[in-house]
Amino acid sequence: MTTKEVARILLYHNKGGFRADLKELYERITDLRGSNTELSSLSLKLAIPANRGNASTVEICVMKNSTLLDLEVHAREMERFINRLDSAVLNLPEKEKQVVLLRYFNRTNTTKEFFYIAAEMNYSEDWCKELNKRALEMLAVELHGVQVTWGEND
Image 1 (cartoon, rainbow, N blue to C red):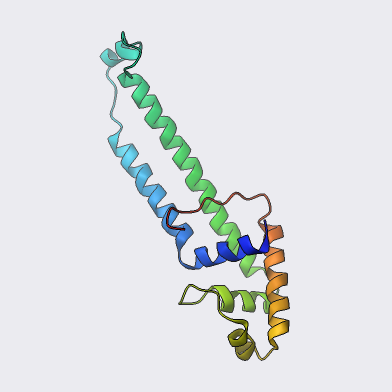
Image 2 (tube, helix red, strand yellow):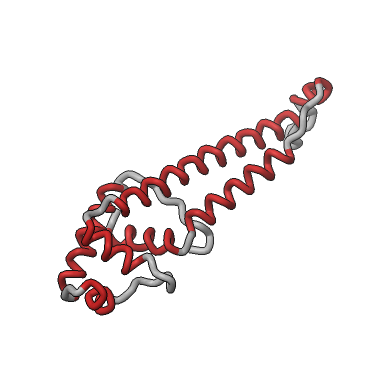
């Protein structure tokens, strides 16, 4: 994972993107659970349709359950990723954490210029850039091997 990818992840996280994606996943899970109905024993006879192009009631139910299970697994993975990201940011050394919070976690949901960060922290711009670089590298190491699923509005 590159530092540019980590920066994009932090901005997306600041916008609430991952939490919104997780909420949407749970809504889809709830909808799928609500649409599943109990199968009667008679519907089991439809398991092998005469016309291979048609899906039986049992096959449809199995497909829904498979999708539901996949969505639940994906939701749990996303929860773990959000927790891991929050923890990684909070466990950064104090100076690096302060630069990351000022640069990526702001109300405008954009990367704040180093000029403003330097003024707020009473450091030089170059030192703020170095702290940012270190922080992103630490986060990249911490998030190594994590696959990020972006929302459709990314």
